[in-house]
Image 1: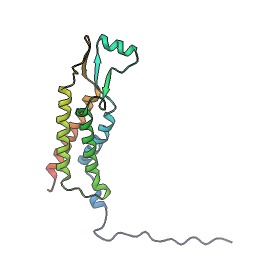
Image 2: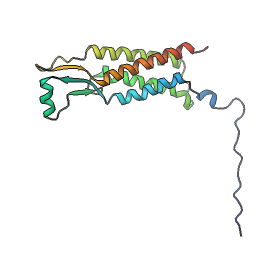
Image 3: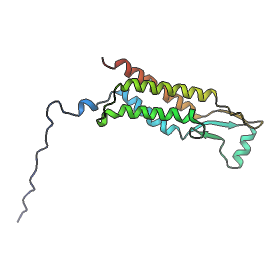
Length: 165
């Protein structure tokens, strides 16, 4: 004897005007901000400056690091990356039903501050307490961080230009 099939319920269709799709679509410009913010968090694990020279060779032999990540390079290294991640969260907020007023303007402000802070970090990269024979310079993480901040800034400018058109 066969068991009867369980009763099925029809999938409810949303009433007109209540679809979430209208508030959750994101343009490619907005995805630029999201990707830049996520990659900025990854960038904090890369070396933001490296020490080279004979002193660095001795330090390497001892098994010690010859550079610092954003977390060890100071607030002007990790703060801009956190600002880019915050900008990504702001851009994503409407996708989760949160209404953030003036999103593109806030994104623009955060990206601009991030660019300025990375430039400050770049200019002030050489520590005063370097031993004789050691040289310090920007690492790969600083270049990546600067590129991400500029890309986010360009995306924010494009989003700001198209805002309320």
